[in-house]
Image (cartoon, rainbow, N blue to C red):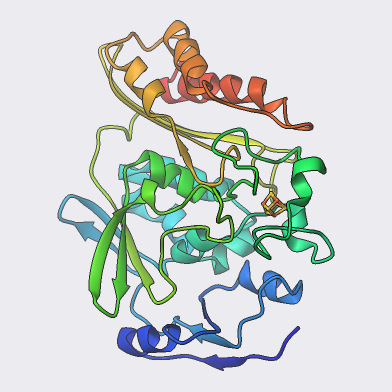
Length: 326
Ligand code: SF4
């Protein structure tokens, strides 16, 4: 591993000044970054540890909940307010990684985690995300875990977070600090599709810091479910996952939120499928129709055509669970 400097500033201002310099990298829990550094995939000159900043709180917001960027994944998953208001987020967090990792990983770090495409981690292989314009090992290689939505001929990787799929479905907002002040970004606009610049995972500028995410109040707490399909029961990334949330009144769907994980370079929100559910009875026919709509435009590669069947099946099952039909 390349030698690096390490600092632990005590104020937001000193963090922002430090990360404005080239070669710096923020570290919080380090549960992904340390692996990337060991593999030689990322080689920062200086790590800026932000753990002294007061960003761990989970507090009521004007409408909803404010979750600090340094709140631990385990802390958020078990928080009473989160479980009561947004059980979907708690379920998604508990589906991710292992108990040990959830005790280290932070909300901000979870958002910033990088793809688990094996060619990204293998520095002997071409990878446009690791080295722009070097090629993509996965396009003609083993691409069983890869994208079926939103990919480009430069990169077909998927984004691995479970937490982010729930936050995308819950209409969360990201609070970001920069040297020119703060800004707010819809969670669904935070991560990017690969296009011609797969090396850029998200819309956070190099000199900006995630402060928190905020989730607005909603009527989905009673009918929500996170379903993750993976190769083993724990400590595995999603082949396909679905965050499903329904607002049901007397058997009729008043509102729906749906997002998928394991299928794209960002959490994949299914707005057309959501619209198709509104006003329909909460039954299998409505769910199967929404699942078909959700899969429009999906494209498989050599080894991941099974996701074209697994995707709609997972959506239908997640909606059944959310509606309380199974
Ligand atoms: Fe790299 Fe993306 Fe291709 Fe994987 S899919 S090898 S991350 S460019």
